[in-house]
Image (cartoon, rainbow, N blue to C red; front, side, top):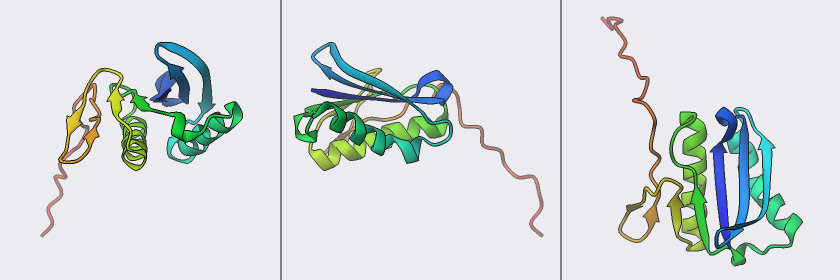
Length: 126
């Protein structure tokens, strides 16, 4: 089974979780999570699995949305997917196919749809 994670659904207003087997969606849920993805993602995954009577050991792969949407929401989804994959020794794939390799573990990299909005302070320190 595949755990699918999308923390940028509806402009990051919702988290979308699915359990898939091959290409068939067995169950799907959405969770209201405006600016609360970090608080609601793991409990949402736990609830989805428990409600369906699925043991986490039945998950063989994690797929995560890794492009577009809110910077923070995207990073929460990707970081959580990578952490779960690492902890459970599962492969993690980006929905748009991005995958980076580290020495011992494959991780998904977030792909941002625009450059970071970081400004340089023009205040003089002295």
